[in-house]
Image 1 (cartoon, rainbow, N blue to C red):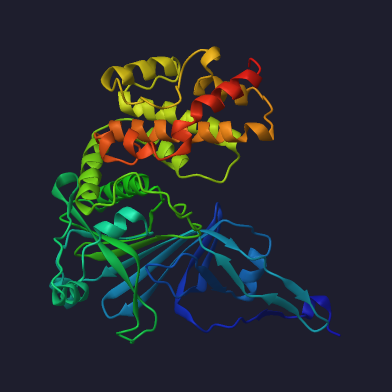
Image 2 (cartoon, one colour; image 1 turned 45 degrees about the vertical axis):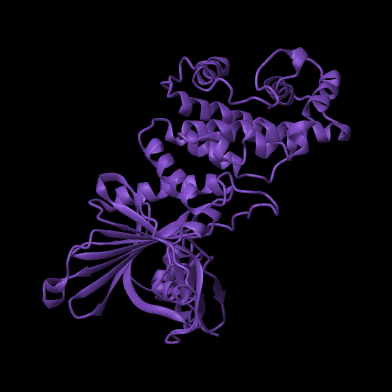
Length: 452
């Protein structure tokens, strides 16, 4: 048996099949920086949702990282071909712990890998023939999660258009106007399941192409806004976790990983905007123009996400939707936001009703006295800890539905859209029991509620 001081340090290799190219770079956290680290990434594609980095460490590097926890950051480069350098920057790396195995003949250290939070890949073209042949396309490209609005607004690709023409069908392309003269078009995302198999392609998800952009980050802001409004129109959340842009000198691709699956719309639940391609296009363009010119955009964003959240109790849902309504009223009235002197919701509500006097007709009143058990009074009762029994379930459920309809009508009006051309119009809501039977449930609930 060798003395402890004489036992060598040996790094145990890992299986390396199915990974990308080798990169050499630095691994950092705060003041710690470990240079000359060899690494590989999992194979990635635009639709990739999770990825890992695999660190091929020397014994000294393994010993240094033995006591380090995440998150880490890695930056490394490799040459893809003559005159082209690709740099990858992985952030929010949470590595698995490095294991030290003590043996009578040696110290064994395991190789390490970690989950990545985000990845930035920059392909840089060095001076030479390839750079000289490139142009500045002024484009940005986004991959988005599916939702109803994107589904009906996606333009045909060449193969789909030819197939439709064979049967006498056609549809015109939809193009959206964005900031600074840029335009955006929605397409199906073509996903190749087997490399080299040209026919093994699935249209899975959607992509958005922005053309004529002067600044890629302005395009990113605009597409995020468009997807936020598409989520609202669809009652189904979407976002873009991968996007890319090109200049003459480089091609940049960015991923955000580890975003979970979003809930689909409930069966039988209609989107806010009718199932009509022209109406949906008109809504998104109108809403985008209004949203882009308004203040308090984060408050509207929070209100829309409150609408799209379903995994909570009835009481929490009522309180959360009421808070979202207050934020949406700020956006709708464009009141200046003063943290030291915020207006009461009654003032915001009064200003909003002055511009839209009949918008809440038929709904459970948002504000009012204790005697009419307004939704505001119910919210206060919940916040102050009132306990509800099983017999109150229907009333709380109705209250949640009416708060949702209040909020959707506020957002539609704030975005410049006619309530009658939506699924929260009086005609559309008349089909719901909660719309016609809320008064009796409200009265029964009011009789059993204590004063908060």
